[in-house]
Image (cartoon, rainbow, N blue to C red):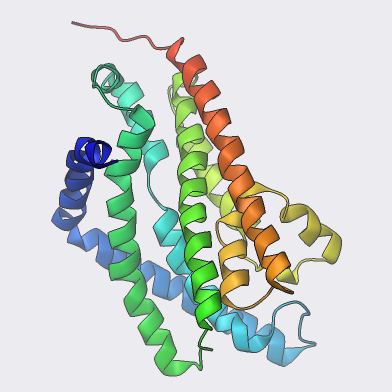
Length: 267
């Protein structure tokens, strides 16, 4: 474990150095997250006040859900899909492949510090700002512990989904359109745009079987107490963990097949 940490530490330090060099990106992320959160809070507040309150998500938890969904969204923005696409397009993938490290883990090591720092430096001010204007419920210690485990699993899922999308670069020379569609689709299916609890019951049942709900919906359900009992909480984490294991196998298979398509020109 220590040997592996030493091997991937330079990649993590490089990612951390990059994010500290482009501090304006963090400021823009904070402004964007604050604006998106405010827009959603005001919109849903009008829905609750102006008509019949939707079932499935109490109004007292609505603001917390929306704010934390934006912060989790920042944590999941690891840009691994963009990194892989860029390396394949430029031919830098040839250099990455000869390094004595696991390519997927090196990508994770580079991008995880960037996402974590952005989520903390951009997300904490947003959370603090909204806590001044809204009465955010304080979660229990048990829910915080469940949330911490779910967040770790959600980070793994976000990495795996983005890594698989990045592998599309081995097939097509331009993945911008694929990444754009992925970002919109994942945000919707994860519950970042509309909380999944507000969907019809049959739709919710289906969406909560997909891996995307493990990014936003599952962690926030556990944090806000949106589960029945400990067995229900365990099932939520089990679905997340099951998808992490399954996507690990899919990643391995897709990576081996992608390597067969590598073509690097030049000397």
